[in-house]
Image (cartoon, rainbow, N blue to C red; front, side):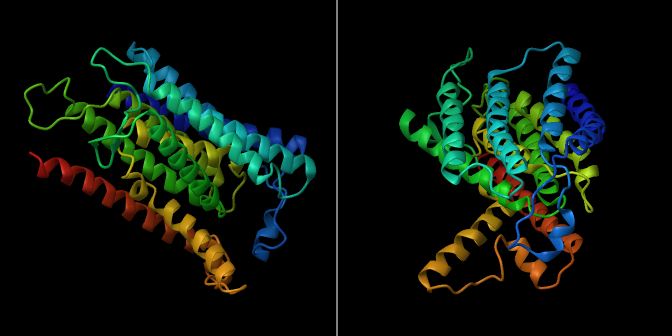
Length: 354
């Protein structure tokens, strides 16, 4: 438990201090964010704002995770290291996309197919490694069983598990990417999700089968406490970054950050056996992703008509005249309600089976 607190504090301070250093470096090199010409006109004032800020909170979270283990004298676990691998791998794909946008001085970096292939390859590597590295109880970081609010008795097998992981990772990473359209929106929502993972990880550790042999209901999860420690590192790092990312943003996280955050969120849900709960834990990301799917689908089926003024959903409200801060705060409220509902379901399921 001490490690969770240490990780959160160090990552917050580290991200808070690293981000302005990164801002100065990016400004010196002229690495500013290109803005889409077909987006809301108010966004043109943001042209040239430093991007790739995700580098700061990725580094801060990793440093804090390492220091927390040095302080507590414990070794890193396979589950957390695999989530870090997924986060960094997707962050690298996002970095390539951001860098190409800057070099080309336009809002298009990697082609959609190239970005998708990169995400899939990282997801496959995460999944393949995750079904190995069993501990003394025979538990691997990733289970071959389907998990909803907890692991079920439905065995999928290696191939289906890898395909399921690809779906979860792609959906979450691209969902966070779509949400990252207003200052602080994705960062604030991600903080709430990571805090929920801290609660889930600690609870699963306290109610683990390893500690409660005689309990009628317990959790068969490898490394839940260390996953909570990593979630604390990520929550703190995002909080430190949010200080500079809130409106008016001094820096954007870019695809480097949004894909990395999506990878970390999906990775934690997978190793903590809460895969189906991910839809609520990242409820805002799901809603915004669905708004794009609905818009594109209706546009094609109706021959060019639109449901929303613009997708993703946050831009629809911008074009309706809502202020940016108003949209962000109200969407944060929605994200918080989704996270609270997810935690309620998680706890309620445990109570029912007692």
